[in-house]
Length: 306
Image (cartoon, rainbow, N blue to C red; front, side, top):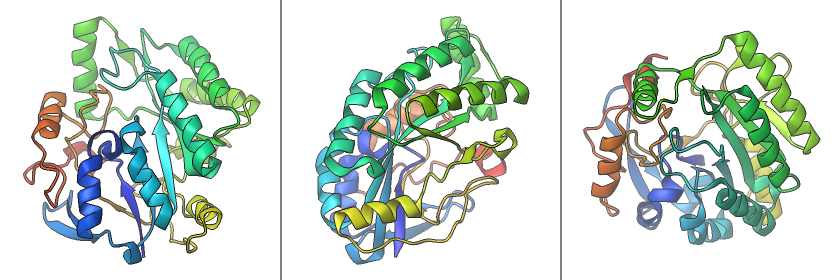
């Protein structure tokens, strides 16, 4: 049995819920191998799936599917809420709306089903260190008692990320910087103190050089899924650790998303090289297709070589 990740490559709950429902009913989907371009099939039959991890910035359009999933399988929602200005996040829902969604999911399904992501941390003229301290304090306070973990990491500045950040800076005047490790560690320590004050465990996603005693994140967390399974009355979940990159402690899973398909327009996104093409891909996608996104869309080269 397999843990299904849906998806760190794109926001399936926000934009592709109809496609996901169709593939669940069909019992499988196709996924493109990022290394060799070949496609392979992933079973989505109930008996072949041990649990689901959903990644999103807006779960509201997906609530009916969460209800259906909860009847048969455990799930965890990795919910990103950063509250950044529109110069960085052009079309994500307002942070207050996302907070309300998180609170509702926690009440309906239990705290183990939801993880808050303040990820990635991006330092710009509009979001300097002092801004992050105030913003994180506000968000953590609003989510206290409804989540028990917040996952953080600093933006990975791939070539296409630099290009998109530079383009946004020219358009908006919002310059950016990639701090040195000492400055990053100092901010992480301050965020960790704030998280503790709100009863949250702060974990760091796949950046072990910055850890300095911080917990390492397990974004595909078999133990958390197993806790959810027990609370929902489903079969136990177990899986070996098989991280996607150095420092990643995720459990083995199958991700069913597609690169270059998320229309949120976040300028720091590692999975979208061209936001205009991503918006067009979403507009043109076929909800009945076996694969999400154009078959000819390659993964960003930086991801394969990082």
